[in-house]
Image (cartoon, rainbow, N blue to C red):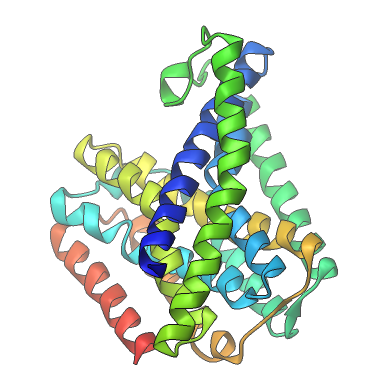
Length: 314
């Protein structure tokens, strides 16, 4: 029953997150917010809403291991699984991408996150540090966007999948209501039943967060990357992963600390955080040396993730 309810919670969470993104994007466009700003901020925050609600719900339900495990596990899954599986279907031509700056920001965020984790607990103070770094990243992104805009490189509305500037206000409102009601409901169902599964099988909340919850919340990124690989949109696939990982580390944990402290399980300090960093470093040749993620690399990345899951479950 717990598995069924966890699946139901995850489904509600993903559908509600999609509804919130659609509502927020189209409300912003109707109010005259530039598409460029919408793509840089609202879409990024909206797609991270499920992870954020899970983190907040886990803290309130006294299961902080799920909150931190979801972030760390999602970042590892985003690289090894979300790039590995699409590469099995079609080569991801990352040699055509220009993501060096964003990648370096992600690496810096990962290093700062690990350093703060060694403090033992993510408090409001450390959360504010993470949010300050996020603000710097967004400011830099907006500056880059303005420079591209001046050069005549505008963001087309077609590049924002959820954009429909003619959507009536009643439908925008419906999407927002569904998202705002569904997200906390789905998060509560998933966290509560994931904790029950952990108790039933004698594993920790941390392990459940690193595996079941992390893979579940990475499904939207996986779907996006699969379609991007098939359409030869390598910049979308790689940018999706890099952006998601930065928001997970800086925004999710940063905002979650407003609702309570997040203690760091010693297992994170000795293993999981280093696996996350190693997975991030694996992207280096694809970003800097114009190496494509071929099917062979897809097998390697997917196998590495499978091995990681086996190790933490044993």
